[in-house]
Length: 529
Image (cartoon, rainbow, N blue to C red; front, side, top):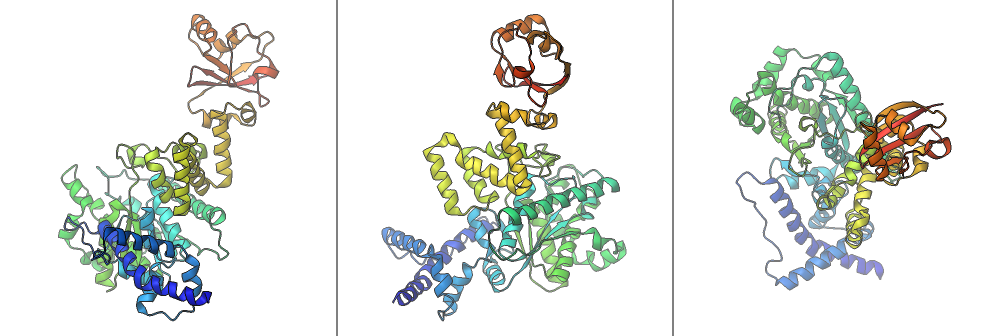
């Protein structure tokens, strides 16, 4: 009897829910990708003949039924479904990464209106996708993280993922989003940067598999590859003869990355040809790995289109590009090294503590969006975090969850613990935490602190210690500020200038004293005994 009613529910899903949600999804996708004519095209709403109240009830029922995932998962395997029924199952397959529209991780796709083709490809068999990262620095930054997370979602859906390091293309320079030519890199610097970016990528893939993947089946192994591997064997004549002839000047000049520079500071021929090299990268991956998908930042759409056109001409095949939104500051500036506001992914450039603090300081208006983008929490879990935030906003529960998730993904559990210890030392006024830290750890936490070495002499007063450490310009300043309560040793307020500095009270077990004047001026005193 239960099985019989389950079949009836499944039949309802196929005949009622399918057209409703296909309409909703096509509406979302079409609005996201169809900007060519300045307006959006929408399908006919199957519920438009119903009253507002009736359509609301039907939509609510549809979503309640679809929340019963076990129904489709268990009954659907034995139910002999028709083609339209199969489309419903296929559309909600775990391999369909277009569901990332719900998390705002995908912004546009190319070619336009190819969502149905993409869904077919994704759900019929596992696909291959790649994203490229030029080693113009020795670390990736937070602006690259969303592309990496997109790759991780593809990997979680059992697709093959390729992270391409542009050892060759970095020497040419991508003009996208740049107002002038890139500086030329030495071979030593390029090699150093490639190693650093490889470390960034491998660390994130490893941390994801270790801390975020809870399924029994292992994830497909990611491929990290350098495009210098195939360019070293290609001569300039061969490249121009076999690849260059497939590009048209009018099309190349129409790219936004080119037009912006042509009417601005100008562009070198080297950077003008960048799109041909990125296009050839995709052609090489298509031929050798059957890679039909490319992911990039939204400013990469022109380069992605060039690759799609090259493959369609030379290989007579259809491939697809997806872009992710650019992460911007409150003022709308893109996060990245060119904007001089980069938060790096390698710990030697940005510490786990700094990354943790960057994420936890997210403004309330952005935290839900960033939870969807940068974490693997389910949408109901994120909704619950936001509900708790509305009830107790001072606790900043979703902000802390975002900071923990991102720090663990980038730096692992050890990095998270380092960030939590540093946060405790800075904000909790914990003497116990300070006692466990080294001078280097304290320097990372209290960025810009002055380090001094002092000899612990018998009868050394607080006033003399402060003057020896050059905390004040004059004795008069010292008298005034200390007496007024603006002087601290190890988070403890000191108001007596003639108080004797003692080992048990003023010096931590690690032979360090953290001195603060006012709210933000720190000195780290290393004691010589």
